[in-house]
Length: 475
Image (cartoon, rainbow, N blue to C red; front, side, top):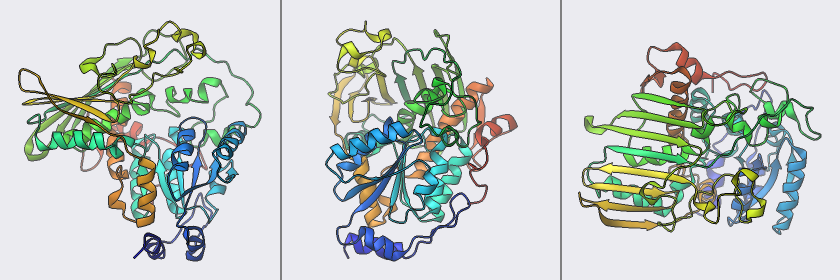
């Protein structure tokens, strides 16, 4: 049976449900017309200013994928990206401001979500209810509750869902993790997730009128509606608790996911975090320096430990991560450009090696050596007590292509970053932030997915919503 026939066969089993109270249905004839003879998967990209621009380029390179629509609440950004798509030599996509209107379009097969964090789960749940497959950026949730609800929605509506942990599609990472699981460095007892990424101050921003063309109520969505400032808007929303999860949920979620993957563990038994907002007097609410320890009850009663280290300024290159020694693509320093004259003033003194100012990766420790990962695609090992160089490698893959292939085959088991795994890794983000904000260790029940004996911590994990942008209690 051809992939397109398999897709149509499985599609007949799916019934669309309501989105934000509006009854929607997706007909088999509509799906056959869209996927049909050319087997195209029509993708709508939601949130196209920053990471969404990468989604545009990513999906444009996948054979058989079509960028069918763009959605953004900032009309100036939306119009700019529509022009960018045309420059790629592909048909101009439809455009939407309100994702709910987009989800009523029966010709769209899937949505790719690169909106701010507080929208990730809600958009994804609505998409599942509308019969769309979902690519959702990291972190998959803004709080634990909505992440669990998203897992339930993907299962109930039989959707294909890919999380934006692109390292899981990279052969270099797969090979590194296989070495860990095969015992190359012996019994792995600890992993460190390193996120030393250059971040300048965001300064202070005053309240001002909402810019023309910005649909601010829609942008705010489920978060509390507060006066507009530039630091509550484009990108800097990462550092505001109402909309972001700090650097832990921005960059470090990648390293947390890789660390947990390598350790072979699920939810932790306890989490303890300390940190603060150092050096800068600005509007940032989230910590720019944070250390967290996660303890796991591993398989066969063996305990495992993960250490998370977030640092925003000057650092050293541990295990040569970020120094260029691995031949890895690495993680670009925040705000840096190839042209030094275009760099922010605070960063112009860094010199010619400013592309290597980050130390972003992982180190795993075992009974017979250690393994280090640089960024997302390269690794090295050192074996025995003499630290002799061992196996090493690198290799990148295509996370978007994996998603599209699984939409065609309807084989959810072939997704490289399934939502069930994403929810576990993202819960570690929420637990670390909860421990930091409360100033105490939290003990977690993996079976119940609840903090033990701490109602205040569980309220933080639960979150709150502004009507009508509410994650449903029942999926």
